Amino acid sequence: EPEVTQTPSHQVTQMGQEVILRCVPISNHLYFYWYRQILGQKVEFLVSFYNNEISEKSEIFDDQFSVERPDGSNFTLKIRSTKLEDSAMYFCASSLFRTSDGNEQFFGPGTRLTVL
Amino acid sequence: DQQVKQNSPSLSVQEGRISILNCDYTNSMFDYFLWYKKYPAEGPTFLISISSIKDKNEDGRFTVFLNKSAKHLSLHIVPSQPGDSAVYFCAASLLNRDDKIIFGKGTRLHILP
Image (tube, rainbow over all chains, first blue to last red; front, side):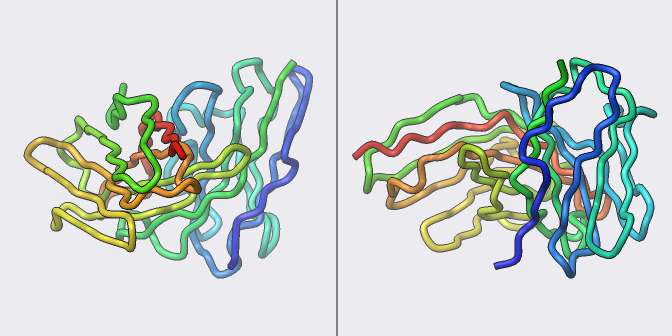
């Protein structure tokens, strides 16, 4: 069964450093998303991406964050200058059609980001 | 800002019995609801969904009930099996508006032997 994959599974970085989290969505999916879950808190939406542009972003997704689909398979989340509060599990998700049309999103296993 | 609330952080149910997980929402505009299941070190896995035009949706052992007037939904698992032990997230979205999913905090379900 096709699945969303994410690398690395765990990333440790120093505060102020740039990190890139990578995702390979399900191959025929068209809509891509990033969510995060801070330890003990709920899963929060960060950004949605379609047709090579951001379609929606949350207030969490400030100028320090960016997303890119550099080729036909990868979808990346970059944090330019990490802060301690960026420590969280980051989940990538994809869907074939729009969730707003009643379609579920499929999630990857997550990347645990630890900022020291 | 808890638009989707799961007030029970954990629930223990005997194997073979019915598990009932509850969820409340505050935004009456929500019209598409999803349940996800999550094992440790894995991402959320989609289980079942329901749109607001229905009050029940069933898929095998899983049934979701929606009470729009009470802004409440529940997930029934019957019979409960050991592999059902996981964290269950209730989530909501807005059809024809945007694609983000708003999650609750989750309920950890323990199936007892």
